[in-house]
Structure formats: structure tokens, C-alpha cells
Amino acid sequence: MPNFALASFTPQRILVCQLRQLGDVLLTTPSLRLLAQRYPGAAIHFLTEAKCAPLLAHNPHLAQVWTITRHLGPDLNLWLRLARTGFDLVVDFQQLPRCRLATLLSRASVRLSYPPPWYNRLLYTHTHPPRAGAYAAAFKAGILEALGITWQGERPEIFLTADEQAAAQDWLSAHDLTPGGFWTIDPTHRRPARRWPHWAELITRLGHHQADFRGLLLYGPGEAAEVRALAAACPPGSVIVPEPMLSLREMAAVMAQAKGHLGHCSFPRHLAVALGVPSLTVRGATSGGWRYPHDAHQDVALHLPCQPCNANTCPQGHTRCLTDLTAAYVASAALAWMERIAPQHPPCR
Image (tube, rainbow, N blue to C red; front, side, top):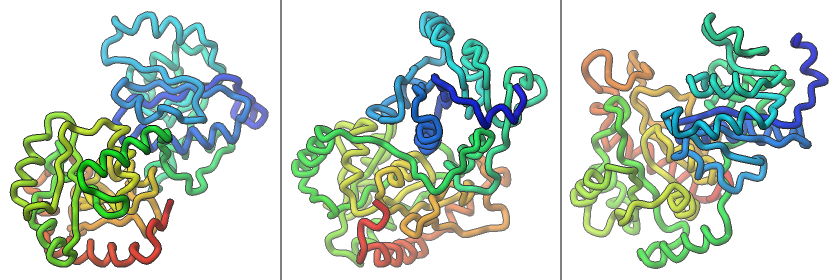
């Protein structure tokens, strides 16, 4: 199908492929809204891994979410059903092997992705480069420009139910927290080049400046011991460790009531944007392209000549971008940010 035919192309069923990670799936949601606006009569389906599916629950732009594992065998019936569904358009944001399999099985007349390696070129009928240098969600949505769709500032989205919001209110009350009276903090990261080591000192400094400072420590599977150790190093009563660990949607519902979010460049920062909660990110190896372009969302970085390297471990054998980024420096930036967002909080909801 030649490129010019896309101007009159009207798909009835669309399959969007983004298997992982949590943040990347959330950053795909603006594209779902854009596709729904461009093709209001189309049924949009989403292919992802099971761990990411809760982020898409209750999304009004989706007709169905297909969840798969990392092994083809257990999902055989799913792949057969997907092949029989009859998609007109596939948008593959990732080009992982299972995304390519879904694209192939779909037999869609339009199979769109970013320019692939030479050995995958025959799999896609149309390609378009992401938007270079843009915010991550805009970068992804750049592929849709082949369809005449342009990102216009749309934020990531997560849709909470009234029951989830009520349960979050009960949870906060049980932990002596009030809406707008606490900060969520994401102090963990599995990548050494993105894990800042000075959280306890930062929390202590913030408490010295704000007598009522309360932090809610967020964490994922296998990280409970790490956050308990951090809590033990903080002033008594300054932080709370959720026990048991909050699920993804529980975390979202509780974070929606926070005054703001502080953390690493990881999933919770994108969740904060989706919820309209101001965020401050301590940045090491990653670039500023992950920051949503709004004054309520800020980064703190040393801006060393080697930043950003976007590596998981430092190529030079050190993590000075993090170890040399002192708690005093971050606290100064955090207090200025807190003062700026306070008069009009919540400024971006």
C-alpha cells in the first residue's frame, strides 16, 4: 500500500504492541488517545505483558488488552485467537520478537513501526521515525505522524475507579496520612547508573526545613528490605513503608493524593505525570527526554560532560553523576521546587 493511501485509510480494528516496561507502557497511552481521536469508530486493542496490564485497566480508548508471557507455548491459543481477529492496522512501538510475531499473524493491511533493521523491512508496510529529541511520549507518538497524527502535549493516562479512590482514602486514614499532606518517594532502582545513594540525608534535610514533612516510600518486588533499611536511617516518623507492598493500581490511587513525588528516573515519575502530581527526579545516566515538559515536573542533575550516557552501569567505572550529586544540592533544588508548586497546587491536574 503506498504511503499516500494512508490519508483515506479508516481502520476498524487496531492492534498496538508495547510489551514492557511499566513506564514505557504508560508512555504509550497518549498514542492511544490520539488513535481514538483520529479513528473514533475503531476498536483499539493492546498487546502487552501481564505485569503491565493493570496500567491499562478501565482505559476508555481500549476495546481489549491482550496479555502474554515470555514463552510462546502457554500462549498458543492466544496467538491463534489474535490471528483470527482481523486487524486492519498494527502499530508496533517495540519490534521485540513477540511484537513482530503479532504483526505477522495480524495480516493487517497497514503494519506501522519505526524504521526497522534491514532483515525486518518486509514485515512492515509503513515506517516513520520517532520524533527525535522530544519528550518520551512524544518520541513514541512520532511514529503516528505517518497517519497524520501529531502529539500536542497529551500526558500519559491511568484511569482510577471510584472504588479505588475510596480505598486509597481509607488506606491513608489508616496510616495517619491526609490528602496533600505527604510526598511519595521512589528511592530504589535496579540499575546502578540510575540509583542515587543519598536519600536518607535528603529526607533528613527536608524534615529540618519542613517540620511536617512526611514521605511514603514506594518500592517493587524484592525491594522491601532496602526501603526498610532506608526508613531506619531516617528521622523517626518522617517516612512510612507500606506493608504489604502496594499493587500498581493501589500505588496509583494513593499517589494521586500526594503533594508531590520525588524519585529516580523510573516508572513512578511517569505515573506522577499521569496522575497530575508534581514530580522532581534525581537524574544520573538518563537524558532529560523523559521529563514531561511542564514546570511542575523537574530534574536535578550534575550535568557532567559524560551525561547522559544512558547506560545501566557506568562505562567509566564510576557513578560520579550520582555519588557527587550531594543531598545538600538536591535539597536546595527540591525546596525551591516545593515552594514554586505550593501556591497553585495541584498545578498540572
